[in-house]
Length: 210
Image (tube, rainbow, N blue to C red; front, side, top):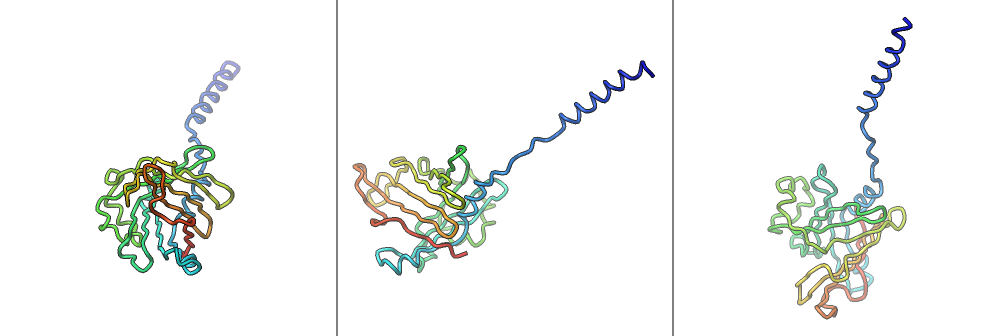
């Protein structure tokens, strides 16, 4: 028995080491990224702002998740509230973490926008396409910081987002995301930095409807 004892100790040690190597690493959920992504989802409009100030239009904004097993993607559609069958902006956003304190909302353009009008109601329709079918708008990503619980703020680079709409050379977006609203100021500027398009007074306030 005395001779067997060291071998028993060695066998127990090897068994324990094997068990330790099989243990899976614990993946910590990114609760802040999850919070941001959830806040961005839903239907919004600027009806209240348009009633207070007639220089603002009543604009609808729909943002709904697609490709849920591939990451944090949203289909985004904007239109005059009275003309939702003719949206003026259709995009896909990808929400990711950049660093300990920053997040990114990358922007993609769709091929043949007209095929996707109203598809925020049926997000599974986007399962028929993938990332290879959309085009990244390089330099147009919004970089966001978490200010407090359910409150994020961010913007694009000052001159990085190329835009040729209405004589512009670049566009600039400033965004604030809260529990009950999205505040967004999109503007276009020419090569000399002169204002070309967008709200002049300040951002649009999109109140959450659902």
